Length: 307
Image (tube, rainbow, N blue to C red):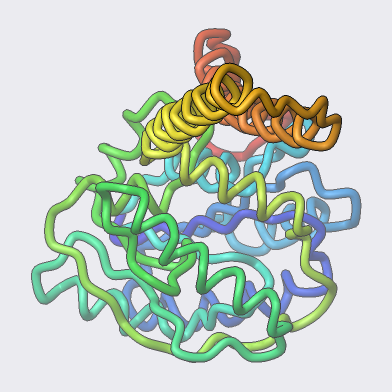
């Protein structure tokens, strides 16, 4: 098969018919040997029924229906695991990423690249604080991580089967696919585009989900937070040591001991706060280790028309 397109879906009933038409027009301009893999990530609306209707109309439409919502990254991963194409495209169902760009990504790949990602120049219809947090996140994670993750990119990209096989072989549960693809190496490049406003509906990515996603990216590709916790512990210990020396000096040389409730409380709260921060950082890493040790399935499929 020439090309597979993986589309994670969560409550996108308003977008699916238009998305399907634009995807088919875009992909058939490349090849008629294709498949569209819709992964229904526990949608509560009519998304699954619409996908089933599309599969009856077009045998090249495949679907995977999860038993519940397992998250965007695992939905993409399920599609990658089942993709048969020599090239695989990842695209969201909200139509912010234009399906018409797929041909340009494909042609760029044929120049000798294994990954071609779509890099955003502009993001229409998004609030300033979302733009700011996204911009800061990519720059922050690149400072922390030894892996250089392309700036201002999402999961919209095309990858070769070679890259796909590498990604599928990675066993960790807390997926951060754009980081894993960057980590794999090989020849990677980008195509610039302007991201459109969501076609219909509202975003399914709350700030809590984005925060969790950011933590997955940081913990998956950097141990620096653990080192920072260690450095912070040493710094606080050093400050405390000098404070002890100062206290002893005041008592035995100055004989000027003030029973200061304020200074005592400040010291206790400061040290206690640092300890809790360090424990929280360690806990995030331990929690992810525990998730992997359990070895539960990454996702559960309720039904599928894949063979």
